[in-house]
Each structure stands twice: as C-alpha cells, then as structure tokens.
Image (cartoon, rainbow, N blue to C red; front, side, top):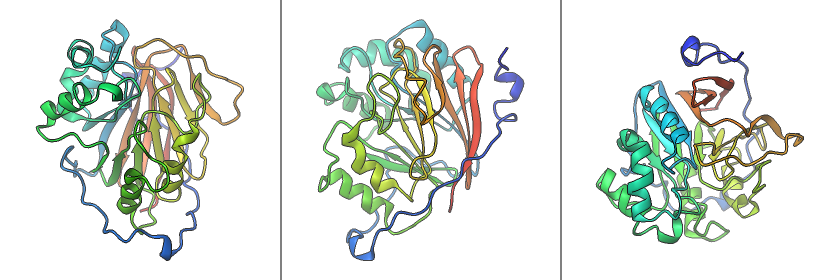
Length: 297
C-alpha cells in the first residue's frame, strides 16, 4: 500500500538525487546583444528561501477528479501553482468561467499559467481575458519570475518558437550569459514524452536554449504523469493528469524513470536556492513518485 501524503509530511520521505549536466557550449559571439529582461511583474516573485510550487495541466474540465486534485493543492497553500495548459473544451471565455474557474478559483492569485493547444485559438477572449482579470495586467505570451532563488520561465509552445522567433530571442536574452542551472521552465507540449502525443520536435529550439542553464522543464498535453531520466542535464516532467481522462504510456520507453497513466495527480515541488524536492501526488493523497535534484547557482 502506498504511503499517504499526510503521513510523509509532504516532503520528509523524499529521497534520491539527480545531478545537473554539463554546460552547453555557446561562444561569446553567439550571446544576444540585448540586456537580460527584467523579471515580469505579471506574476510576482516570491522571495522566501523555501517555497512549495505545484504544477498540473489538462484538468480544467469541471470533473470530480479535477476538483478533488485542486482542493488538495489549495490545502497545501503553495507559493505558486503552475497551470500547464488546456481548458476544456475550447478555451473559450465560457469554458474559463464554467470549467477553469469552478476548479481552480481558490488558486487564481497564486497561479502562473501557460496556454495549451485548446486555449490558443481563442486566447484573446478566453486565456488572455481571464488572466488579465486575475492579475490586473496585460497577459504576456511568455514571462519570467523568481521563487525561492529559482528563476521560473513560462514559455508558449503555441506560438512561434523557432530560430529567429521573438520568443526564442527573448528566452536567450533572459538566460543571458549566466551559466547557473537553478531555473525551471514550463510550457504545454512536451519536448520529450512516452505518451500518446510523443516527442514534440518543434519545441527543440526552446529545449536547446535551456541546456546547461536549467535543471527542470515541465509540460502537460499528455494526460498522464511522467518523470524522464535526465536529458542534456535537464529533468523533464509531464504533469497532464489533471482530470481530463488518461492517455496510455509506452512503459517500455527506456527514458522513463517514472510513469503513471491510470491515476489523477499533480507534481509538487519544494524549492530551495540550490535544490528541489519533487513528488507526484494523486488526487487521493498518495505519493506516487518522489526524489530530489540539485542545481548549480
């Protein structure tokens, strides 16, 4: 029988370590000429030295599992909640009101979103308007903020992110010349996945820009939970089991360190300035997978 989250004190039983990889080779000539952008004021930074952050996507459908999971996250009083995209069915204004708001309203003020493929076609009326109403500011397509010493970067897999795109130029400028890896990036469609949708090759430029400069990348899109073995020194998580059904996984994929395609759950991160403890937690409170990783400041 799996231990319940409360019995573990949420983090006391987290074990293991995943090291960060080598820096990628970028010559000074390739560095962007623009100064590093300031941290966004769209989502406020949290300056404490320890913070709990939850991440989940594909759960805003008004279902009972989605509501149970959201209640569990809210009860933990996280510093931030990262919503990894997709409000069902079409990300319209009414879908945000009827489905997203009924599930995640208690977490709105703490939420940092990224749009999903269901959200972006009608983003001006749905996604943009909703988050402008929550945060009282224009909703940027991508942005950054800080939590417990980590730089957190919300990217957008639903707009141009290829070589030469404004988003990729912004990301490179945001990363600057600093070689530390205490960064967490998130977007909707995963670069690597053993699920129904598989690897999203078009997001490779975002991933490549983060090599040697980030320790964690999060995504949703596949309706399951995955932790992949480090690739290019980055630990990738897919946290798309928010409540909208399940997508089967290829459990034989050797890149998988953990996989679950039958439970609803979310990823819990406890961040400190040089480390992160992680746990996939079910809507019923079971710890499905846990461990820790370090980052280089």
